[in-house]
Length: 283
Figure 1 (cartoon, rainbow, N blue to C red):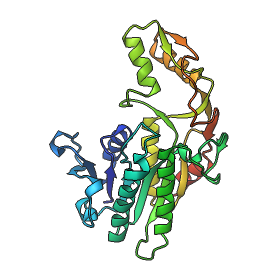
Figure 2 (cartoon, rainbow, N blue to C red):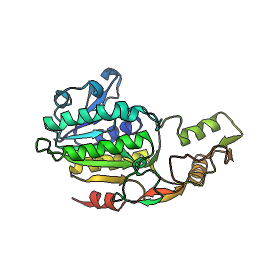
Figure 3 (cartoon, rainbow, N blue to C red):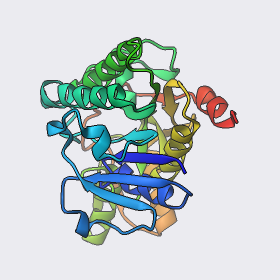
Figure 4 (spheres, rainbow, N blue to C red):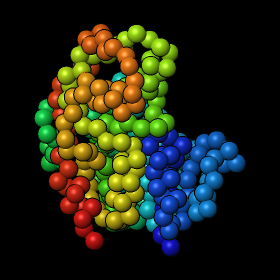
């Protein structure tokens, strides 16, 4: 039976990935910084209390010597501008993953971000150069480059899939995200919902779709490199909000233009998924 470990299993994406893993014939180890006894119970999941920032050379053994690691953990979010992303998170995550690969980990999937592309507009391909403009995007892009260099070390023969995540929505999302803010405004009976002009074009997937895709990519155990986890279809932010209103039968006016557009994102960008589809179709 394939042994697979997951970090960040209690986070927004991680909870959905864990449910997907639990539905399959796998031996799963999930990490938590809390008490394992308070974590969700699944027949094939073993919880391990674990802090990767203090993990040492025995981290591989602590995770049950997995065949695959899905690495979703990352602190400091959703503040993309925080310097801690490259001052604290980057060195801690690289040291952790380096220990694992030197100890014998053979296949690694890491969650990247569309913010690695920076202010590049339009349809984004994995072959496009990265040029991040936020500390978060810079730290993620740097970690990817570090891991690619590490792969050249003959003592670290591991396969790497770098899953660049675009925009997600679904149950368990942070309260500062668009959908939870909209829902809370409706629940509070507010007459209008304050938002930007809503003309930005973005790439949206449900978190359940993302979780399924991440598990399928990880189980391929291929040296995929960077791959967009995206819909491939641009949608306007206003269009998504209006869709959510229709789907949930919510009635609230939209106060368009109340907030300025983010200066760290282009007005229109989405991820091409040709590579993703090709990898997923590979036996």
